[in-house]
Image (cartoon, rainbow, N blue to C red; front, side, top):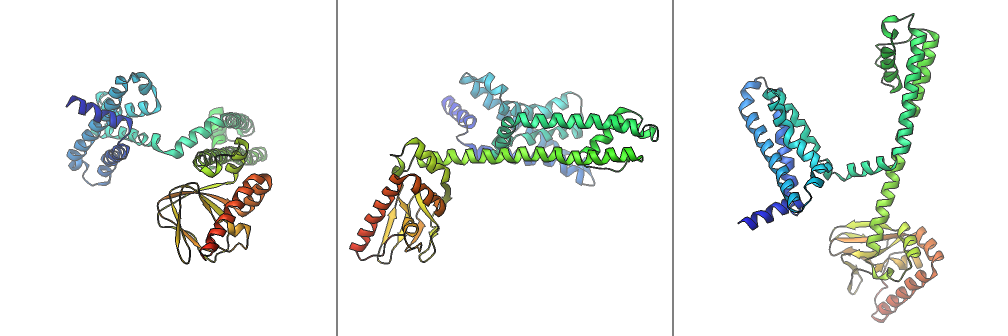
Length: 377
């Protein structure tokens, strides 16, 4: 019994039942947030108190149990401190302790339940896009910090200038640096509440320059993040394609430099089973390599199945560009796509690759001719 419990705890903590665990976590999260929202939407909040307290208590028990299970498992493998100080560990601790600590501090039920908002942090470690954002921010931290410093410089300079220009005319709103800084923040971020407006020509000139500067500062931030995301996506796609390419025997003999060149022009496509890839009679503009799964070539007199390492569609690029057969996936498959323009450039740079594809194409054409079958696409 003890061994089974230990195995179950290890499975839960290590993530071997990640699907069920996340489903339970998200269900508890939805229930917990409902304890915050539903009473505020009803005419009789006190009438809903009994079940909101019960639901809140159940969620606290679940998140506390989840945290303790992971902590115990980490302690058993000698990584308790590592887990406790990790991002996942800190979020788990906040999720388990936020509401109970608020209650112990003397907050009433309505106030303590508001701390359930901390449970919104629970999905963060599992969202790939947020992990990507973190990597982008870390890589671009220098340029982002430089723009942030520029933002502060413009903010303080504008606050001082508007204070000097408007303090005698509007002492109630520009009579102090603090009030002027509030106006500068609102204007620099182009929020423009309109509650404080300069009236002197100098003040309006300062406001105009400040608004334009705000557009420039936030444009810089946007450009840095957009460029960082694009570079991160390219790196991610390159690594994925490189790993997939290594599974294709056809590329096994290529040198690392050639393999990197091929990887940079291939597109990785995941397709479901029984999905048509190309149709007979279409104009071909790319060829395909099978990295995982299996595809079926539908010839007039027979069907041919191609597995990992095979490629198809090259005849349309070498000849008339008309697909001579239809191809569909048999199982869920991963394909590497080489477009026509990249195909020609790649063949020119790597004649050995062109020769290998040409030899395979001639072999297939000979086999098809021997059986009176149209050539494979």
